[in-house]
Image (cartoon, rainbow, N blue to C red):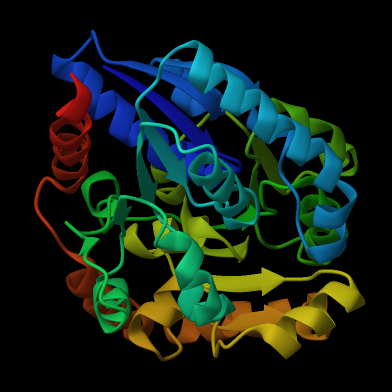
Length: 359
């Protein structure tokens, strides 16, 4: 059995790696090829395109890469045909994968398409549902998505959130502050100067900066001369969180990871004025972080755009430290809402079972 996979960002690569690792435990003969990153490659995906070249943030950055991505889609299509691959798994990355899905259907190939972690249509608007329906199976990781798709007469597969299997609450922690600048270049270069101001001023506090890859080390040269900050790349997030009391993190999947580890977090996000203006105009959303969206209330404070500055971060650090016990109670309620049993294995078994249709 062969699968072609397509993810375009670090979070999708992480989720894909869980599935592939689970499948490969007892099914070494199942092959995976496609668009992925280091984590998926490490567990057995044959990468034909590394996601490092693909990550874009914002509307205008996506437009700049449009021609490049269009050509890539044609390359992937030819690879699927040449290798007679019958199963396609698309993971998140809606800006590209929805177009790729349309292309696959236009070609009328004899394939089965799984959309695992589809784009957040409940954020971007329901018009995208028509495109997502082109997939044979829609596989989601949040409970409210099941009800959302049910309204559109679509059955969504849901077993729980995969992070429940991976991240367990850490009860005993130390007193450092974790700083996470994000995984995309555009995020990193915007947020690191703010973190630098914070670390330089808060000399009585100890910080850890966790980078997504070794390639990001070039952005933190100015931190290397400071005595109150450590820079980590290889150490896993759950190990680092044992050393930290709270965190400051760029909005993304990692916020949910931090919540499930029990670490109170300040969510920060900053983009160009035009990207922010367009997003604010089009997006139907009250919160940007998954813990807050899950509970439809504030668990973690969010500092977006102009509010994302050193002064406000310092204020929220004090807020988290004072209200830590109350925040931890809210985190537990959120965890209970996402709970499941053997979540990753259940998703993996579903892909195996449904992937056998041509084998």
